[in-house]
Image 1 (tube, one colour):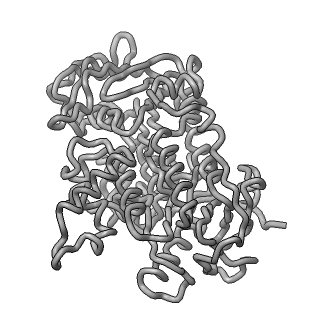
Image 2: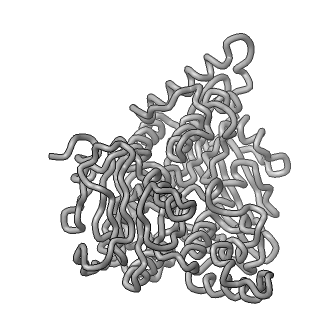
Image 3: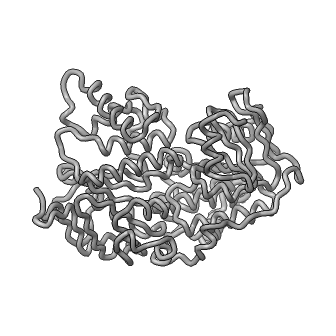
Length: 491
């Protein structure tokens, strides 16, 4: 079924409230065939709530939802969305970790039954992975829970684009590149443009403004549960897009981060470690008060290095030399970061409990005070810090993890690609916090897949196949040099 005017989906005055929080406050949205629609806004603007409604997960409190011209408001669901060719790649991945890649692909396709279904499902998902992400290194019989978060994201994306007997009209991509490096991100976005040019529609939610400006035909800006701007992508630039989002920072701050004067070796060594390969030309060294970047293609040993340092500090393992307590800001917050059943305040305070014990018990007043302090300092958007951590948007959950680390007594902060789903304004605020804390003597080890973030670092180690292959100062740093080091031996 299609609408007479060809519209795939049309939402009119859609609203969704969670208690006092107005996640959506009357949103209109339209997606036409062959359109890549960009959806941007700060954390808590309502983007993911809107997509959950469109995917059939959340029922709106009011409004009209039309698909292919038919009013499906009263019976809309995940199944109905799927029957109408609408799929969503969620920011918080929805794969079953105990199943294989092929078995996860089968979940989308009930028609894959009978003898040999697993082979057919495996061939299908492998073919789509090859098409979108050449050289991905994922096998159909891999257990999803054993894959890195970047590879899990690749599987979830590829699965959404697979087709059997049911037609596919619209794919919603909620922060699809948040765990991908620069190479795989470009592979995905180039694939999306090809599919859109052939008639498929996509909604791209991203805090990477360059991606939205470069690849989207139309851009919709949300703020506080409302659409505040909607026009052709060509009518926006970075300045006007940030202005529409209501960001108070100047664009010069985004284009050029404040540089720190740093002389290597002027302070004592805080961390020293070797990579697992044993063939790297230099050890991993970080000095007190230094911001050290870890770069290179995803899953080439950066996270392993951070975990090695964490194990040495927390469990006494002789995998590295670490002079001081550590805290970890996890990028995969659902698996490694948040405590799902706890409040926001308790999630923040867990790393600092020792200092909040009074007569053998945790002081709830001290815990609440710490929560309020960091809500203000890092601008966590919630009406009540006693609410469950899952009541927050993904970006605000990540803010809570930053607050946990920075509120602690840790002298060394390990950051495992921690800016997943965080808006540009919040990123700049966190960058300022990191620089301020480094000036006070804290050491930051920062793995990131975002090239722009590396310019906040005093120097950057590039990893390839588990080894350090380059050490670039801020002046030497460029995307070209990082990619060259990532693909070939350093001179």
